[in-house]
Length: 147
Image (cartoon, rainbow, N blue to C red):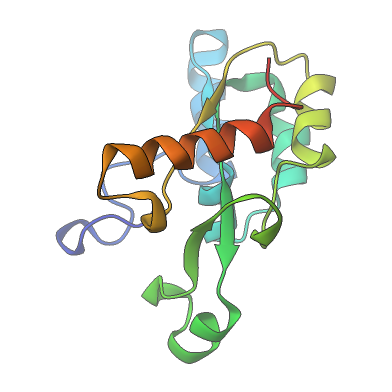
């Protein structure tokens, strides 16, 4: 995860890679779980499907959101600039997870927790009405997949 400039790299979160997740789970076993936010995996180029196959049984919370990869921004400024990362809705997302991959794998792993809709689209900021509209769009896109 990328944080503010004074926290680079990695901020205060040590649980950012499969290697660290394995160590944490080995140490604390069933007393701890993982928060699954697919945009963080996309940011680190970690395969979401592989993550779910290995760690899906340990997911206690997941955040539903899409991440759009701006390929021109990635080309022009590189991965560390964050110019490539933008939030998106529904079909415009490059790294969509409103399809079967994430939800079917979570189902196979026995996940029965909540589906948290995280809304981070700057086009839907500034007024309460815009924020509400963004959440309603996200809700409608995710309705078939969330309880």
